[in-house]
Structures are given as C-alpha cells and as structure tokens.
Image 1: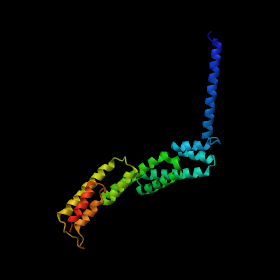
Image 2: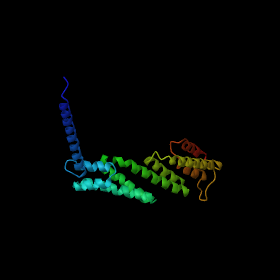
Image 3: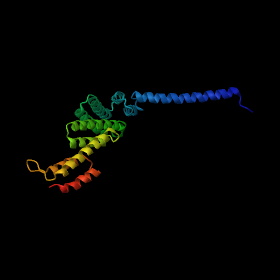
Image 4: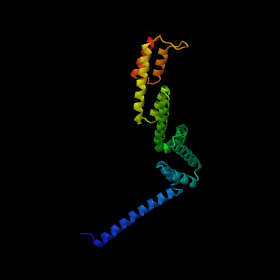
Length: 223
C-alpha cells in the first residue's frame, strides 16, 4: 500500500525543518566568527586577512584581544600598504625598503600571509626592474644587470626582463669585439683596455651563458 499523502507531506516538512535548523546553526557560527566570538574570533580574523580584508581582520583580532596576532598582522599591513603606495608614487627606493620589510613581517605570520607574499615579490620585481632601467639610462650596464637579475628572482614571470637581458648581452659582445681589436692598447695609467672591456662585459651577462664563456676565453688574448 502507498503511504498516506498527508503523512508524506508531514515527513517532508519535518525534513525541511531539520535542514533549516542546520542552516541557521551554520549562520550563527559564521556570525560569531565575524563578530569575534569566542568560538571563531581568531578564525574570522585569519580568514579576513587571507582574503585581503585587512581592516576587518585587524578589527576582529583587536576585538578578541589577541594582541600578538593583531600586532603581527598590523606590522605586515603597514609595511605592505606603505610599499604599494610608494611604488604607485614612483618612490622606488622607499617602496623597496617597505616591501622587503613586508616579507620579513610575513615570515613572522607563518602561513597566514602566504596569500599575499606573491604580490609582495611581484612589486619588488617591478621596483628592481625600475632601478635597472634607471641605471641603463646612465650607461651603468653592470649595475643594471644586477638589478634586472634581482628583479627576475622576485618576479620570474616579468616578461619585460628578457628584452633588457638581450640588450645587455649585445652590449657585452660589443665590448668583447673592442677588446680584441687592439689587445695591447692601454689607459694613461698603464691598465689594459682589453682587460677592462672584458671585465665590464663579464659583469653584464649570466655566468652560465655562452657569451660569458667566450669572454673568459678571450682574456688570454689581452696583452
């Protein structure tokens, strides 16, 4: 025999009430977490921080009176925001200092700041790239290479670096060519132009590059 329709409806209503009760319980838990309640205040602060809602995270940590967490979060936020702001205003040296500080503060937070470390490295890559361009404009090629190399360590995906490394390698090959044209030429104080050119060229390319190996081989031709 089939079940009485009225009983079926009542059974479904009971099931709906049970599901609604579970949903309400979950909502209360989430609300408690966001308000800094004893059951989830720290977790609420951690989740807000991980999602980039820094002001909310700091407020929750302060409300819960978790001084250690609040201080560590605040130290990172101040350094990160300071570095970001300085970069946007093209204050590159200041931005570099603050962003490096943000990395140190992130380490103090352990995995809590992991979601933001990538952005810090990305900004640092842009800072060192900007420094490299400045030195390139001053024809300080070895210094430019150093800055571009640091930029790559922070931000390997920065595609603009490839063109700069290629330009520096062409410059290094030009210096190598000059060195071999007159290997006995010397400066007024007696130093070998050949060796100076090759020394400068070696500072503008990677040590594992083919060009660097060629430079090393060419040193023997200097007199």
